Image (cartoon, rainbow, N blue to C red; front, side, top):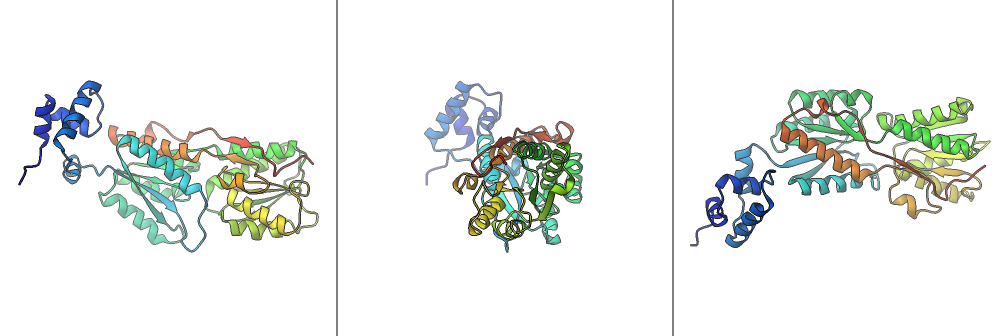
Length: 346
């Protein structure tokens, strides 16, 4: 039986110390490129395979990060939001030598909050990324910090950002820009389909939108708000209500693209001309916003960039063994208002 090559065999063939081989295998910095190439060539030549389990046991690291998606499995999923974050996070993990593992949890089930804490206590993960509304669950965030467990939040509101690092866009500012755009387009009456009550970033979008409307001199009653849940079905059902009002609002604003796509469906079914009869806007600039007709005016939220930056912050915290809330709070990435054919001047 042929003896398997060892790390000492690799070191001997490459002409370097055993610790240097270990640094190369762990993608550690401070190794010259030519030395790194020698070690990799020796690994390939000998057919050396890393004992991943032994490495993790020795280092006390799993090299795995958990991404928690808030999902009710009995409700249709958001078409792209989770996927966009996940793609960006996976790419960053691959570059940094980590593995991303996604988990779903239902905010309506208290036992799922307990399950997230158990994931942190299990030793299976080096850190966790929380998405809304878990990223705004102050009790959960505090419990993870008491465990000294590294975490980063996606699109957290003001209170959670005081407790842990967060990555996202400035939702309130985005709401203001969307509101100003529609007011400048001559709109004076609005229906607004909001997100879930526990989704603080969605609430900030609405807050910003209302500010833009009142700053323009319109009465707050110019905006009538309906509570949705980010699904296409909610967009269909709630927009049917709003578009039946008399007088009908000139603009229908949705807190995400899925609900806006549902609103387009309802408007078409009612034989309304978009945007001549009503302008419709979304939020996020997910792929669906470009394939519906007419294409949606929306706010571009760079989901892949947000997911990737969250991983970078988390890995930096893990490697430097510091609490990343101390070094950065509320990192905002740029957003952009995207004007398409679903809106027009009044």
